[in-house]
Length: 468
Image (cartoon, rainbow, N blue to C red; front, side, top):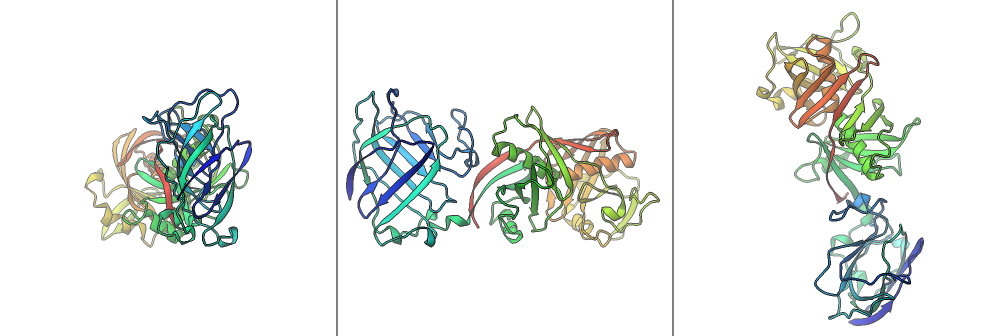
């Protein structure tokens, strides 16, 4: 059934939106315009309510969900008709979620009413915690409170026509009817093709995803697809943030170079820093990491000092007198490989080939040889393995087999370890470009502070929500 209803709502700093839904009538509070407001022109308006705060997007661009304001009114392109459509999308992590389309005539103090040419359609779906709402067969009442952040327009609505579906309690077929509390909101980032599912976990030190769930989410056929899941958590030991990672196999590494660049961009985007804070401190399993966002958008990361002591890497390869593992030998299927071992907070075995020949990395059967290094008995915690080709003293090329992730397009800590190993073996200078399948990284091992610095890109791929 259709019922005409006049409704008006003046939002203030904290406003309640009360919906009284019965079998065939609906009261919908919308925005009202203040005195002396400009005349309304035909256009589409969108109201989005999301759990993340942020600024409206530039004209013509859609704001990612994780950057949308808690409540905003965004003007869209003018429409051919004089009807306005308002889309309500409520915080899916709240008590319930609602999706609705409403068409109504709008008025302001300076314009006459714009008539509706036909009845409008209103569709309501919701999911509830039983303890949060008393639901009867044909009647539902609920209140949603939201903080408004400077809505840029206010309207009054009159002669609204809407239809509400009957028997709301039996609606269960829509995706929106599923348990919204089981949704994971994420943003996918990539650094040179090394991709990660980024999760805003700043409200808890407990990951929102289990290792078993991470395996499913990272599956490229049946999940989102990624090399790992990264959690942005509250800081520890005086740091601004904490970063934790689950690999695609469910294991938890100490650090990830490409991951920390993606982490830095995620934090910057999440908080709309836009250059106001170019660097911050991050607690990781490998210790303190300090990323810095450059003017060109790339991320420079102080990766700290490399670890060279065999027992700390760890590796059981017999060390040199200084307890390092440089230009050592390891046997794989009867072939002796020259290796140097380095830890950048996680273990790396770097090889420039067998014998005196310069390795041609594109000819490697990485899927065959990589696992044999990773699971070798000489690496009690397994290892990441980098196969390196020297192009010049300032230009290296590598392929990587990552512990827990397999062959990937890039590995930031691996590129750092490669430059350290190349310097220790006398093959390169302290500033190098390292080519990876996903693109180049700039690596510097500074002599004055013994720290390794990595510079490279990190970009958003897409954002969304997934049922856990």
